[in-house]
Amino acid sequence: MKLTIKKTIIPALMAAMALQACTKLDENVYSNYTDANFPTTAAQYAALTGPVYVAAQKFFDNNFYDLQEAGTDELIVPTRGGDWFDGGKWRDMHYHTWTPTHDLVKNAWDWGFNAIGTCNKILTQLQSAPESANKKLTLAQIRAMRAWYYYNMMDAYGNIPLVTTFDQNAAAPEQATRTAVYNFIVTELEEIKGSLPADVTAVTYGMPTKWMAFTLLAKLYLNAEVYVGTPQWDKAVAACDSVIAGGKYTLESDFTAQFKPDNGPQNKEPIFSIPFDAVKAKGNLLFNKTLHYGHQKTFKLTTVPWNGWCGQPAFYHKYEAADKRIGTWLSGQQYDANGAPVVYNGVNVVLDPDYFPAFDVGGADDKGRLAGARNNKYYADANAVSNNANNDFVVYRYADVLLMKAEAVLRGAANATKTEALDAVNQVRDRAFNNDASKRFTATTLTLAALYDERGRELSWEMSRRTDMIRFGKWEEAQLFKTANPGEAYRRIFPIPSTAIASNPKLHQNPSY
Image 1 (cartoon, one colour):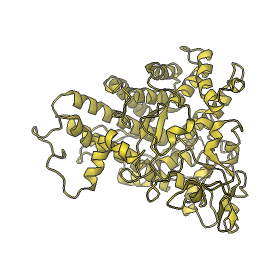
Image 2 (cartoon, helix red, strand yellow):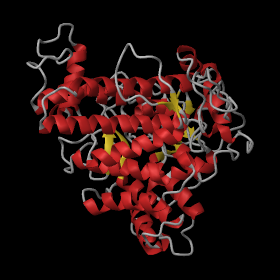
Image 3 (tube, rainbow, N blue to C red):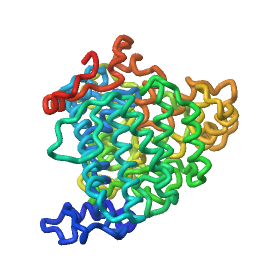
Image 4 (cartoon, one colour):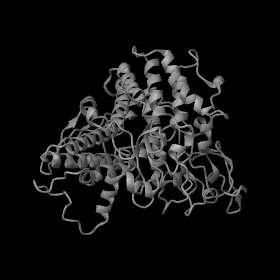
């Protein structure tokens, strides 16, 4: 999103960034509270809570995005000669051979629990503040963010510490069961959803709303059978219906608009986004990871992309030629901004979505550097600064709500009909195929297998695939180079990092690690 927009609509984030940039803080910074200097105005509360949202941006820097994506069937980070080996961490993710010392496992854990600690600290500080509408709203929003952080950690690691207060002198926390964490998140969201904003405006953009809480509840209920062993299909439908009935969201007519560098509150499909800015809120480097070096000429970039991440062939070929969503992938001959074929180092840049002779695709002859279709969903930003793009990251959006409802119905929800499921999915299909009625699902063709593929096409590279693969029983299946590993269901969660166990002896390693 452009900085000029961010300055006006995300005061919490910008205030926090400004404070971080200062070497001398103003006297009204609310780090040490007395009755005289508790925050009172909305602006003061926004400045106070900025670190909660700044922490969210770090999911790129601290590898949580990578942890969720790099082991799935929708992408691969191959070694390209001497490039992208990085100690073998991407190979380990593809082959599902990560260990408790893996960089991504450690960094993502640190990200989540540092963010939870930030939420707990501010919540604890605010407990004694005078009661007011601003306090009530702020507490609800921080609790919602903490619930989101806990959801991510519970989904990734299973049994984790559950801490809701901040005390630097407290003993090391005990490890809670996945069920206990799941129940905590559900209870938190049910308690605070009525206190969160129902309005969807520039002011609420990038922060939790009532609808974000319902969407997160839908995620929890849809995956309840995985998380706690008890299906909650009816509750999943009810949560989705709450978002749908709220009438605040609609599918974008232009699928790609919600992911472009100028995306923001004007887009009517995103329900919860993490704002990024090339100068003030850095961290979105996604397009650099995937684009070929020659794409600098295609998108008039100020820096050279890194030529790494790409799609797996089987996933790429799930798209039909008429599907507009295939336009987010780049393959074949590439062209510069003037329409001329791109040539890089004397080699014509023709990306081959199927060239994968080995995990190390090679690089010396440039063929390996052209391997794989590249994902440009988060459209390359010509105004990026030092590789940092302005594209906000969309965490939850309306299309996912429609698809979740349909899936819950197909799996057995009694409070909705298959007709409703068809209507929900076909809204998404109609956009993808320009309202071509022949491409709509029917009562016969809408199966769980078909819906799984549809979720993949719609939500590629949006941190949904790992959870989907596990829920649909696909996580242990073979991928491009990875063989099927049906005896390794324990890898549906990641190990507790060795560093975390070393610092807290009350933590126990997940089974089989």
